[in-house]
Length: 118
Image (cartoon, rainbow, N blue to C red; front, side, top):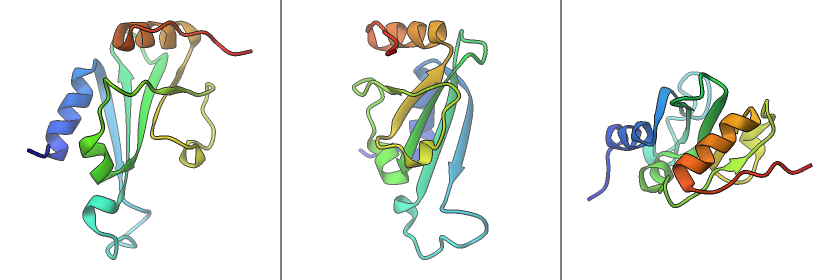
């Protein structure tokens, strides 16, 4: 059974995310009315619990892709802090912040060690 947007946002929050922000649509006004609902852009940003704003996670894609996205199976791509031009980066699941916070989240959520590239 397909999940609703509300159910998927609850799944996102259950990762350990609060302060969820969501952007939906192609731009300002009604200029996306010709784009089917499930093909419209969706951006979801969250602050992981325990990081006191020192880290953020970001999903970008379409509504359709978000509803089937598996957060636990896909490790987010670490991007520089502060991130630049995320809308142009390849991929759909990102994390950024101070190194210690990113390290904590990657270990807690995925069991992996974060090693910063020089």
